[in-house]
Image (cartoon, rainbow, N blue to C red; front, side, top):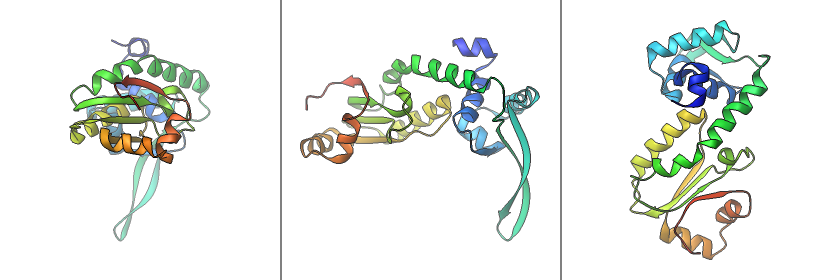
Length: 197
């Protein structure tokens, strides 16, 4: 069991806290929370109630347009005035950054990965436009997408990523493609590096 899961009581709570902390301006319906965090319905209800009870999140009803009629739905959002918010943000971020080495293991069944570069959220730099670059041969895109969704649930936010075949990547790198330059000219980390370019 991870440190934070032990500290906070459950992996579901940690996933929900990450979702709200790393998306502070957004509000979510229950189905969106379940989909993005991959927390089943029963624990989701329990954890949301617990987080509301400590004033970490707030719930409210909003009016939404569904077809030609309006209805109200319950949404949850981060309580921006929660006293320990900054400390929790740092703690959750530090825990995730500590575990980034297991990213290699997550992509082992996705084809022959030749280059795996992490940037953005993985190196605590929200300014980068790309979080993950995957380069390889015989890449299995459905498995990659499923893996990305799992990582997103762990991280608590959507990742920006690119998947390139080795030949395409080498061509782009050889022509000083702006997209490739933007990745390698700024802070990044090569988690897998089996390419010479």
